[in-house]
Length: 559
Image (cartoon, rainbow, N blue to C red):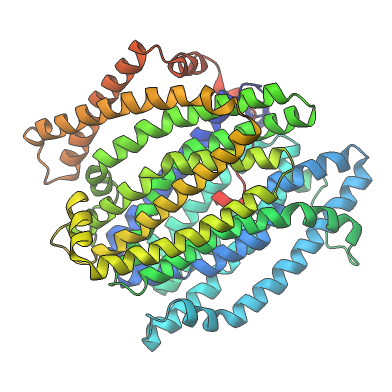
């Protein structure tokens, strides 16, 4: 029975859409649990000081994971593992042991340094938490969360091996189990250990993420072992490959770090609003952008290395068309239904109506950049597939600096310019509530991401002039159908306002769900009359056995 189940999930299919949809399914499962996690946090604490401390404690561990954990990311290690295994089992064993030993040493030293220096950096980044009890809790919670990058880094390392042996189900389930651990911490550990119990729940989830892959690794006799002295000749090639990629990833984490640091100077709950809205917009990002980029990456790498540049461009165009096809209408739906989405998913317990309005407004700003985030993921993978790490490195560093500066500028203008403040409060329907200045952070993030995507698009189009003309058609079709879909959805929201009782979660859900379904039908009808090529391809793909697709697990940046 177990063997049949493993074989069922290990069969390969060459279709990029099938692989992307299967990746999207597993991402959806993980994101559903992530939403349960966020709803549980929202209902227990609301958008207030407690969750501000909790989310702030993640920042240093997240940066540590993005920098050190990327050394053993899947897209870096798999080509080296394949090459080592082609030279024999002994050569593969030597490579695994050396990389593991190097990673273990670097991660342990970095974690110890971080553990000792945490108070200094937290005081520098979050001076707003000045009360002794708050700061002590923040330091202790951050130190507990330092276990997370250690376990997740080891999990990434093991995942590279399980991918080689096509045990894709194990890694696909890892994020699901990770969120189970966090939810366990909220429900079972917090009542006994307070806020630190939440940290132990995250550490438990990270440990489960890592340990689920151990049995198959041990059974194959490939469990990594510490080996000293380390062969620097082996490590040098890996480090040379991963350093530009690490800096690229770190720029994204550092951007979030500075934005959350800015939020800590605003009213209590600002960090929570930022994180809740960011997590909600990450759901379609993980399902669409990460899934398509992950599915396309091995195909792009193989085609480019074989010199098939025309087919390489064809796959980039195909992936881009489908990313745009999905991203635009989903962005519009999220903007129109933002209040319903936030109220249904987070609106319980201590999460009040003002929290809902602020989070919904922040979600609308974040989601405008969805297409840019998704396309960025694909463009970066296209550079990595060609062995080019410098262009995305420079563009992402520039984008990170621009995003931080423009966010800070918007905050200052919002606080000192009544017209600017009134304009955005009116547009986002948050007039009359406190703390609206936090919305300038997702606005800055949105603009920075869109500018970054445009720069990447222009750079890629310069190398492949035929790219843009082949992609812009679907952008026109998607925008046309999405605008009609959004209008129809908005109209029916007002109609169903008098049908469903909006004082209950069920009533809010039915209002949003029914309006959204009718809007989607209208959008699909427009695409049908426009003879959308993507609509036909999706219909054909859904008639295939997409569960047989080969799954490439996500990299460190989406953990």
